[in-house]
Length: 408
Image (cartoon, rainbow, N blue to C red; front, side, top):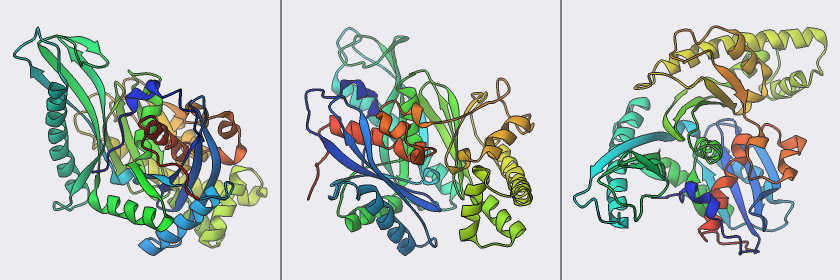
């Protein structure tokens, strides 16, 4: 098991430790591999020391390894030294995220709650979440024999006799109700993370997902946060529903920005490599009027299909009576204005149980309150919110004293 320390204790960071710590994060998308190098300063803020990305040439392991080496070398080139610690992000569509609630009745309500009782309810919830998540993973990927492992756990809410508490330890009471957020991933993904860390010469300090760190970034500022996070990747779009500070569930659909690129190739008669450049020119409004209108039409056609798939995905969530109307966009698609525009103008949500009309917001680097201004004000990092949110995991590892430090 690779378990990331609970991020809810972030406010307890060790301020007396002035030693600078550095670490890498690795975000392996279906089309692009991204990496960032961070340092933690004396004020408990994270500084981006370097950033790199590399397009994957193929879907195999070798292509992933080559893109990883390229992205990481770019990220740590500014420091001129090897970084020992690696935080690895499981692709969001491979992670199963859920929040599970359990209740226990104490035989001796007048006695203070002990750590053993907290461990008991945690084990009870985790077991229940594991069974349900393994079943859901098997159904999603048509593999009932797949083995999953626990990545992260953190308590979302705990009440004692109906009163909410942050930490039940040493409280008195009869009835404890606790909601635990859990993240699981298949063992094969964790083996892949270990393999990549070995190639890079790093210590694999944590395995997590950007959906986890994005959610924690939002909920640490608002423990009662409700929202729907839509992560638009190249080949996959992942949706996470968050209630009361915890991810209730997440589902993915195999549609993303790659479909738009293919349409651009078809309309303009260009190669996939050229389509990426054309899309960047389109976003910067540097195309001639004829090409601009052709690209715009191609994007509209592909996003119309994407919205239909997104609507279908929402209808697959089980147990959600009302969806949070605040939708937060993330991923490469969030940098393409057409996605947000069509989500706002099309009546795609009429059959989905939203309390009111969805309000669409793009997540920005400014939402990552633990970053220093050098990241939030750097134009080249704009749109890299998901990858840079992984810095939160390294910050928590430093608090726990689990970072190894630099190695020359």
